[in-house]
Length: 292
Image 1 (cartoon, helix red, strand yellow):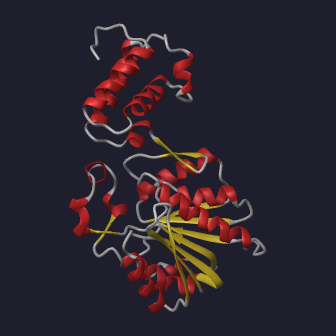
Image 2: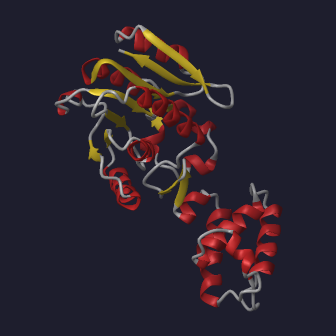
Image 3: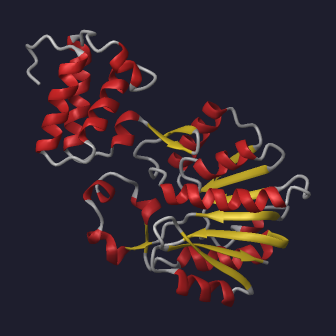
């Protein structure tokens, strides 16, 4: 896209998308639309086509080119636009936190199904371990107005992002804290038991690091992705849950695609007897649900 050309929206979109096609970038037209929508400060892509002859100013073009180059270098689109939708909510995301995945929406839906059947418990107390952007904790708090939700993360940077999202989404019934789920004294920090604990912990073994896509390894926070063995958090949280959960309380995990058997054994060793492994929309054994 030559800088000396007087661009309007439609030709800029076509030229950008064609170039992305030549570089084998996924969803080229959508990427071009979202980057230009963000650059021009529009609410949605529809507005691009409502005013497709709109001139793009030199400063707007420079900003768009900068984002465009970063996407060509592999940076995730969500970090460029600064948002990711989770349920119907737009969450702020940047390199301090993982980009929320569709599987984590499925995990949150499982929690909601259980929570809504347990609303006789007033107030319902929910703990999210490894909250990241706050997508699980804050969605649960929005959907369950009478619940008290606590989200914790070892990363102060992640907690800062989660608190930004809490303010953005106007969530009053959630508390977001810095805490290390692997610390020996983690469980004793909480004075009251929880009815539900949910966690999407770091579960990719370091040995698999080289197998991941570059856009994940190069840009997303390793603290939230990798664990030495892939199972330390499952084991520690399973053990802590025996004291953190109220009687009949439920523990939810998101799993590595081939971790179900090992996590089941860890849950059994921690004293859980009712364990259910559920598949995600792609057919992988992705979630563990264990009742105390």
